[in-house]
Image 1 (tube, one colour):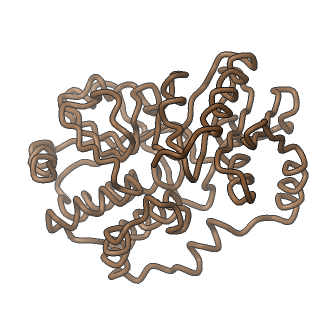
Image 2 (tube, one colour; image 1 turned 90 degrees about the horizontal axis):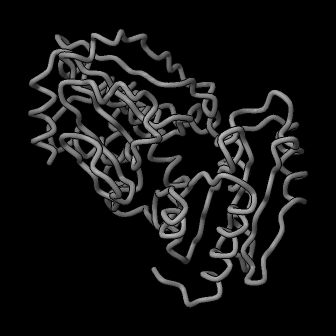
Length: 314
């Protein structure tokens, strides 16, 4: 599939790169990394990146381009790190001459003319890195840094069980460039003291179901004034519960104008079918969805509680 993807890229002089809304390190890293790769290897092509502001990663210089509607008419749209079409940051990809997707989520729908989807990769950045390596594309420092960032964040600093020997091989390939790891890790993980205190306060809000599913529920009126978008808040809160002894399933609920954002996680169970049941998706042990109200969120929590009372399924 990589050779087919490369051939499609070679056919177009205009390329616009999309990813999912509220980008995390993998979405932003794969977008910026692929853009840098293509600019280095195809300097004659016009490469554009589009999307919303990267509020989760304010240290990343990620200025998005303004692309007029007519620009898509003769362009290839590339979609990254998106398992669901409703999450794509700019719907104008549908108007492009051709579409291509690189994704590592569990396949649930055909999105592009050419879908390069492999859920065995720990990150979309890992998939793009393999594409670059196998197709013999020249790396740049900017490309390597962006792609490495996505591999680090989506693998939980190479801790999640999606990490494999291939992950480290690809990381070593990227580290052939002089990536400033000290600065990268500091920017990713250093927190203001006020944020540490806030996390401590939020940990006091953790509750448990009968079968020890940990959860936090944040009502719309309880969100701090001027806080980030609910999906960003939700993904931050869910990480507070991942190291609780005896907890193998955890979930965060955050209300917003769109409904209740749900972030589902596990270190033993396949929670993806439950996310899919409620209109979402993702990975076996890290998925998400948005449900209309608190009542539906509690039904989802009950499903997780039932799952946690069964024998784990890998």
